[in-house]
Image 1: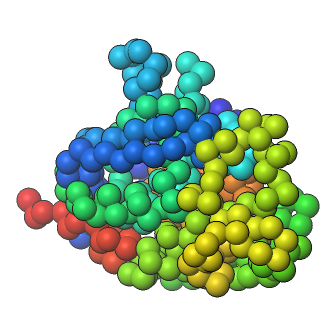
Image 2: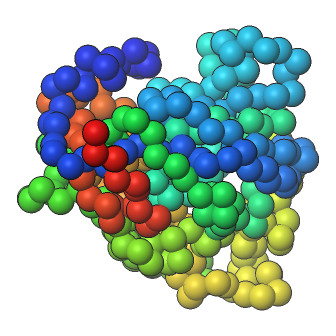
Image 3: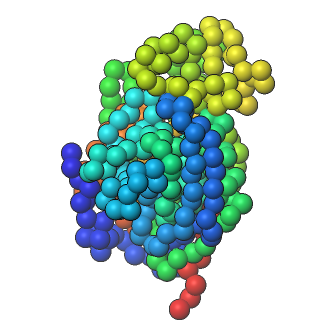
Length: 329
Ligand SMILES: [Zn+2]
C-alpha cells in the first residue's frame, strides 16, 4: 500500500476541533546518546534535534555523505515500514533505511514529544539497555518546549482487527470522549520462564513510563545462531537483552519485573502504533502480536477513512510527561 500521501492536511479540516487544545512539542535542546546497534552490532551515535510543528519524527542518516534530505531523511511513519523481522525498519524512496526504531518511538510517544529530527550515524538506532528507559531519561533531562500548533490525536471510530495464525491485534473505539490510549496485551510462550502473561497499561497513567518503558527486549539462547546466520542480533548481549536458556534467565541481575516479557511487548506495540503520526485515542488489544501484525493493524486503520479521525488533544494528562498548554493569544 502506498499511502504516504494520505493527506494529513486534507483530513485535518475534517477532524474535530476542540476548545482549549494543547500544543505540539519539540525537544528543548539538542541531546545526544550513544550505543551499539542490536542487529548490526555497529557503534551508533544519535542526536535529537529540535524541529518545527508538523514535522513529526524524522530519522536522518548522517553517515551517507549527503546533505540531500531526500537521501538522508526517513520519516517515522507506518507506510515507511519495509521490514518487521525481529524489529521495525523504515526506508525512504532513495532506498536508505533505519532499523530497530520501536523502542525510541515508544519513549517519544510516552513523553509527548511530537516533533524531532533524530540524526543517526548508521542504519540502526542504538539499543542501549534493550528498553526505552535511556531515551525517556534523555528526553526528560533536556525537556520539551511548546510550538505554535495544536496537538492532535487519532481517534478510533470503528473497530479494526487483524489476525494471523493464533495472533491477533485490534484497535477499538472508546465508548466516551476519553483520549486515553489503553493497551492490554497477552502473550503465550511454550517456555517455563515466560508461559502465559497478561498486562494492561494506559499511556495517560503517570506510572506508565516506570511500569513499561524499562522492560527489556528478550530472546532465547537456542535462537542465537539462527539469528546470526540471518545477519541479525550481532550487537546483542546480556547488557541489552534478556537471554533465556530453557528454564533459566542468563542475565546476572535476573528480571526487572516478574512479567517483564509482556511489558516489553506492550512497549513494542506502543512504538509500532505511534507511527501513525499521533497518539491514538482508543483501545489496543494485542494477543501474541508483534511488529508485523502491529503495522498491518495501523495500515488497516488509517487506510479506512471511516474508521478514524484527527481530533485536537485536550487532556493535559494524556501523556506520561504531560503536554504543554497552548498559550492564550
Ligand atoms: Zn522490542
